[in-house]
Image (cartoon, rainbow, N blue to C red; front, top):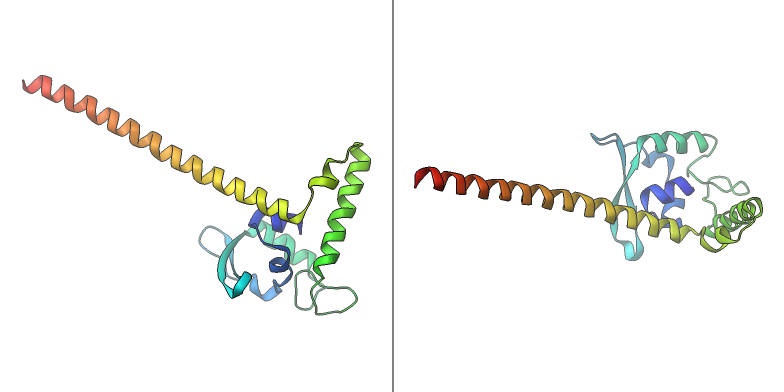
Length: 154
């Protein structure tokens, strides 16, 4: 669940509604294309890395329908509250091991979503900067080249 949320930016309720059948459409970049229904019935496309899909399928191989199924009610997804409790339990366990409280305060599903968004923005920013850098170099080279041509002509 942690890998899924941190690699896709999904909300808990979106992740819990994913069925095993939905993980079948692969694009040319080896990502699985997942159509997610968000808040207010809006749809969006989420790409899941193929390696993560393999791990999710292995995790859910004994489930009937959903990736994350309830052990008490077969064929129904785990509740959001169960996931929140698991996150809290994991955070407390890590805090005890590391003798800190930072994980209890920060290991929350929504923070994984925010981290994904920040990484995505940084990646887009880096791509944009690379483009600007290339454009500047290209224009700078072109301007130098133009001034050289003017000197040769005149």
